[in-house]
Image 1: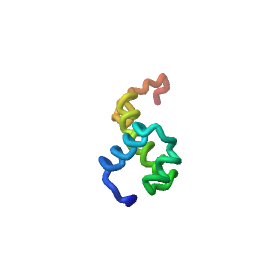
Image 2: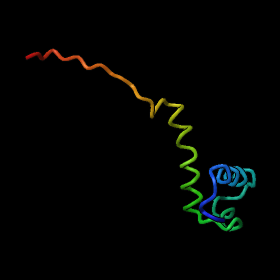
Image 3: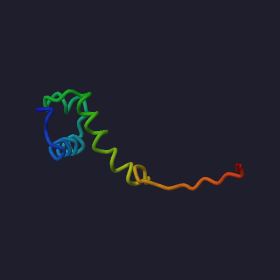
Length: 70
């Protein structure tokens, strides 16, 4: 598989692997994809979901108070 596939194509491939019941390694052999690439893309596509669930990546202002004055 071409490693320059779109995110939607990678997501489809990841979904297909999950539905297949095959291990990642067995699925990747059949699909002609390197296991390391498959795992990288899977993490890459999952990261924004995890980050948004936890509020990461959002700008947050935290005021700092100091008792030290000059």
